[in-house]
Image 1 (cartoon, each protein chain N blue to C red):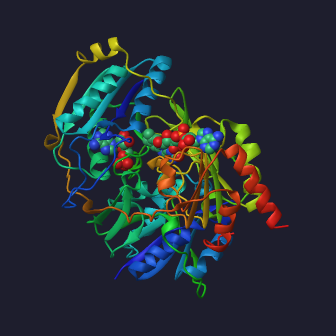
Image 2 (cartoon, rainbow over the protein chains, first blue to last red; image 1 turned 30 degrees about the horizontal axis):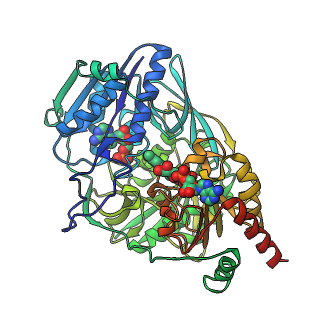
Image 3 (cartoon, chains in turn green, yellow; image 1 turned 60 degrees about the vertical axis):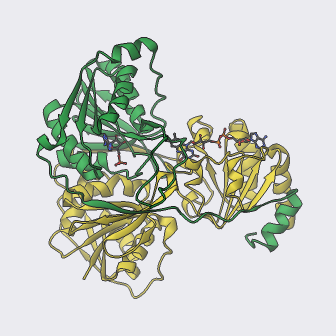
Length: 248
Length: 315
Ligand SMILES: Cc1cc2nc3c(=O)[nH]c(=O)nc-3n(C[C@H](O)[C@H](O)[C@H](O)COP(=O)(O)OP(=O)(O)OC[C@H]3O[C@@H](n4cnc5c(N)ncnc54)[C@H](O)[C@@H]3O)c2cc1C
Ligand SMILES: Nc1ncnc2c1ncn2[C@@H]1O[C@H](COP(=O)(O)O)[C@@H](O)[C@H]1O
């Protein structure tokens, strides 16, 4: 069974995100970059599924050569090989999905594992778009994945409870937080990762129209909430909620 | 002139109210508004949405009985093609997030996710980086798909009921099938539209903390219960109680955060609340930076006091 796992390089979730003075984007100088946490869960899941079913785990990213660091992290966790689709321009989720469709055409995976959302753009689109472009089944927000023969049965985190769907393979599955807890790369894993194959593809060679369907044209910081007050005790809190805030 | 198609979400035969936020957003652009209701036995849902739109298109089909992204996306895209539709709208609920990007793919349309404001017919604002930044996005394609953050748009008032008609639907070939739904059963109001939300975090120490501390307070207030990611991950409470960047976004009149530190990922899901109360024993906890009223105290001592006081004052 072949797993293709998508990995995006994003700002650390612990980083303080600030706007540049000219509001042209966010400050990235000195901000730590990580593998999107949902993608880390995707890598972990592929490794666990491979332990059960055998096969191969291929990781792919679209981005600048800096994103090699995140591919190496995935290789250090245990992925077999990596693909960098080199692009210096920012891409919208639709373009990402179109490029991934080309990679899928070549790699022919049984399962594409993606994050439910990238924690920088918070778009939550790429996996669903890819599934449609390929005409495959999708299972988003996966909490549990069971693969049996040519069928994946997935428990999904849905509104109001857990929904179970099944889809024939090949399929696209997006990860939710509770699918698994990703392993840490071991020292031997990190050493081995340096020698694993990493293929580089220039995005321009893939014949995809990358013109953005969605352009990010402005950034602002949301209005800061005005500072509140500390109250001394329960009685004061209750009084304020009744007479000042008038919410009780 | 824009013409809109609202994807109507429903559950157990009832309109999901978040759909009305999508209507409100479409109204800001202006133009005729249509709705599409898919499923089986959905006449009641069509009647519920009719007072908000010009026309309701009902697509009933065995193959649409369960809401599965693949067949639903095809049918919605079919309905949005050739009818002069310029915009497809839906709520950014779990169901909408699953479905709408797939509709966009089928229409070869750009999509703006989870918008918080409408600037004009092609330009929208949306939270990014866990709400640290508000981005302005422009959709450049002729057809546009938009999902709407329900807490950011006030549902419109109903008007004269629009016409209800049926459409021919062809769900096509689907690789997906529906197996089951395990609902979280609760007598409490739904988290997404409760007037008061009481949320608990790791400070509660365990699932018993939710039972003995959070539930009585929520009962006294008639409130919904929310939670931080940490406690959902730990399995103390259902996953669908998670409030935050990657969980639910809520904006009640009153949000009480108990034993929650206030990580940006949590704050992203509740900072739009009208009044925020934080109860935490750590004076430096970040939650106090966004709380209207902060009480620095041991939750195990003060929350039962608060519950008792509220009960007493309500007789
Ligand atoms: C990709 C990603 C997505 C995420 N998405 C979300 C999300 O959607 N929602 C979310 O909530 N989190 C999310 N998180 C997690 C988030 O970063 C925090 O880890 C989480 O919110 C912390 O939960 P907590 O406040 O319950 O726990 P903690 O941070 O451990 O805080 C517990 C608090 O309880 C207080 N406390 C302890 N004992 C007492 C007592 N006796 N009385 C009073 N106070 C007490 C402590 O002072 C502390 O402030 C996400 C993280 C990542 C990486
Ligand atoms: N540049 C990229 N490279 C690789 N994968 C990506 C990229 N952008 C998005 N993805 C994948 O798509 C998922 C959803 O992204 P988004 O639609 O941007 O929220 C992410 O979790 C990744 O798995």
